[in-house]
Length: 248
Image (cartoon, rainbow, N blue to C red; front, side):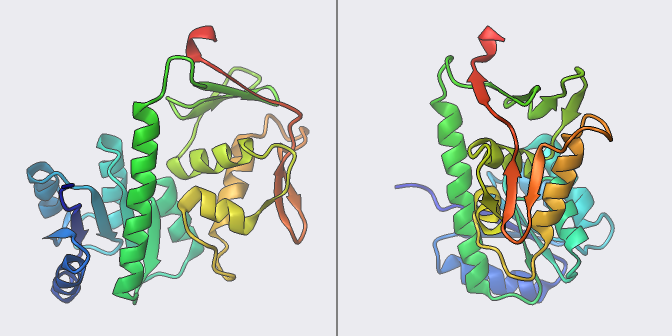
């Protein structure tokens, strides 16, 4: 039998941590709790955590800083909880390495669904990495650019190395799977984060805008990512060529 997934809930509200501990146990999750950054670090060292549910507003070190810290050391999935409705906060959390977010107040059943989705996606990515052969596509070339998948950065036609956040990397790989084809906002959200798009959620537009800026060689160059008004976006490159890193 597979061991129960280990979930770490980081929130200074004991009511929320108690509720989630009891509720998640119904779905065969083992839940641990932490109230701040110090106790979070202790739990991550003591337990084999599979996913972190991380509140944005914490005493001492805030959730965004802790997300950056965790991501610098580990690929463990992170779902952020926030009482803020700002799209900027959501995008910033994703760029710092969070895999998804939820706005308080929330339904515990929805959180369970998000956890299950993120864990499935993480498992699929891990399985793909484990079975990747030497001939797999480590470098993807498009429009004069090169995406280095292992390092998760792109190299501009000028030779400049441009780092990508986790969210930007997932977004770019989605575009590269559909060159010169319409990518709807809903499809991009589902591909990048494994969830459907709320009609009021503009975070995918902010992410596209940031990725477009990173793929801009100069102010006079035509953008690689074009907006299809009222429909979505398109990666405007003629050819996407993947090659093994040992051939680069």
